[in-house]
Amino acid sequence: MKSVKENLIDINSQICNSSKESAFETTPQVIVVTKYVTIDRAIEAYQAGLKNFGENRIEGFLEKKKHLPDDAVMHFIGSLQTRKVKEIINEIDYLHALDRIKLAKEIDKRANHVVKCFVQVNVSGEESKHGISPEEVIPFIKELETFKHIEIVGLMTMAPLTEDKSKLRQYFNQLRTIKDKVQLLNLAYAPCTELSMGMSNDFNEAILEGASYVRIGTKLVGE
Ligand SMILES: *Cc1c(COP(=O)(O)O)cnc(C)c1O
View 1 (cartoon, rainbow, N blue to C red):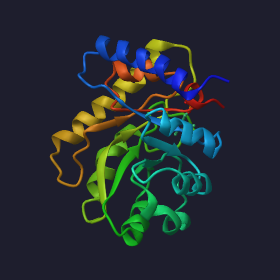
View 2 (tube, rainbow, N blue to C red; view 1 turned 135 degrees about the vertical axis):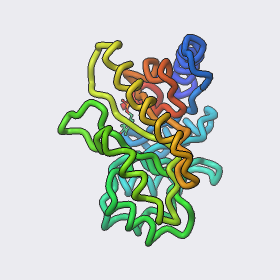
View 3 (cartoon, helix red, strand yellow; view 1 turned 120 degrees about the vertical axis):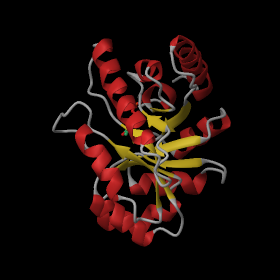
View 4 (tube, protein in one colour; view 1 turned 60 degrees about the vertical axis):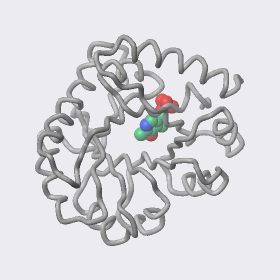
């Protein structure tokens, strides 16, 4: 198995190339997704210089957080059950999968700080995917106005598994277009400047469309 450092050198050079090629002046932050790997491997990632960590299950999240240094930034990237919010919300730096009002209400009730959230959008319309439909994004965000503990920092999506690069770019482009529309609303609680998109198989396409956070597991730390 390659070291995280070796993998990171390769990923960073791809990111650098895609960022240069991209029309958007963003070099994305890398969130290393550690959901498949051990605590030791996560610590290796930290020592290789990665500071943003992503987990999609409560148990794994809390365990990794406990063992990583305090300056690790913890991203919860999975769907969160409403009844589990109280167990974890005050441990989260960024939540990537806000997708329903009921969840927002529970977060607002349980959080003791302003939680930075991404609204998850299902750009492909695949039924198996979480997230709200593109047309619902603006009405959804408008409904969040009264929630004091929620800040919408951006939008997140997962593209379908496909080798078709132009299709992938279309999905990511679509997310960016919606993000731009939300930004134009000028809502204090929803600056919506960020795009969380791109995983091991499609981060280059996401960067070409302006990703500001890529979430990479397999190609950085292994399966
Ligand atoms: C697992 C996961 C990733 C990382 O996937 P890889 O293909 O291993 O890079 C990214 N985002 C979310 C939401 C995930 O659940």
